[in-house]
Image (cartoon, rainbow, N blue to C red; front, top):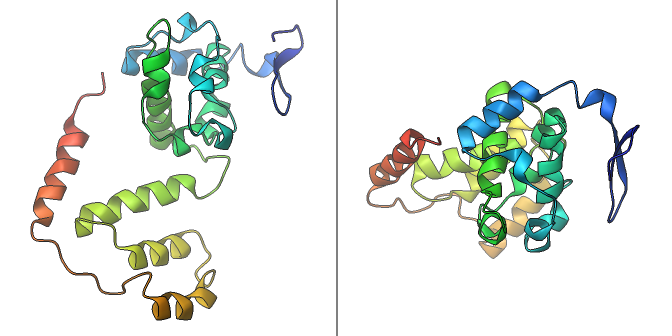
Length: 202
């Protein structure tokens, strides 16, 4: 709902965003998002199909259609700091179900990438840190090494002793291996990462 004083999202908790902080800001960033993703944000007419079919919508602070609405109104800072981009599965369901074929997932991914480039801090601290450490871990080891991921995450997030009480139980149950067997061709995994990095996004 759009009113003279602000933007109100219905459904669940109501959020009112003052238009004074949105309409005059973010237009250049929206243009950049549209350029990179190849999508026209203004074309979204808020039918809500993307959000109704999204498996992770309940975990987002802004479900896909609300995310698109933020961009339409220039509230890019809110979109970039939201949990939506960090928790998105990239399953592409929202894009495949869009009746006018907007690649919503690519818009979300592009916004997340720009947020990373600009060092925008997410609303839920630690999501971006965990994602980046997870990818670095897989790239280095060729597979997920849970023990080192847990250690690095606690160290980088300033919570080094956070899970120490669980260590004896984890070791006893052998849920996490301290030393994991090396895979045969870790270089192949690194090449996959390199190809993904070099692939043009637009």
